[in-house]
Amino acid sequence: MAKIKLSEKKLQELKDICTSFNHEKGELINVLHKAQGLFGYLPAEVQEIIAKELNVSVAHVYGVVTFYSFFTMTPKGEHPISVCLGTACYVRGADKVLEEFKRILNIQVGETSADGKFSLSCLRCVGACGLAPVVMVGEKVYGRVSPDGVKDIVAEYRN
Image: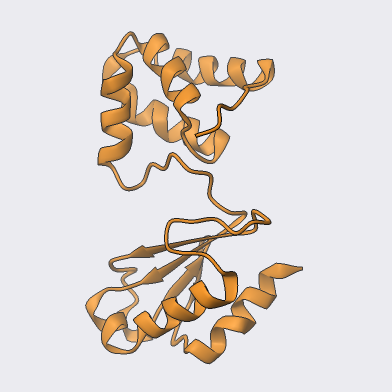
């Protein structure tokens, strides 16, 4: 995996996040949450700085990052797409919708498109089962999505 270079500004912002939580070990999840908000993901370099600032091992930070599905070590696309594969969505064809996103974007689940615009993931339940199958792009929810509707959703964000 390629090393990233943190700018002095971003490095200071990351240290400020740690300071805002008084460099407390028990605040690791909150620090990681804020750091992911700042960078969009948690590369190894960011994890190393957080470990140093909170005086915990890098292995401990890595363990927390990999345990919680909210955290990611790979950059997400500008428009993260999540396809619900909960029971109601799956029964109504979410798997076919997912296959169409993979085909149109030419990426697999967990990947980001070459242009950095889209990333694709699955989730278990959005809580909008009456609208199954459901797709989220960022915070926007699309209900009753069919494989034919996928191209229109992608086109909406391509511009």
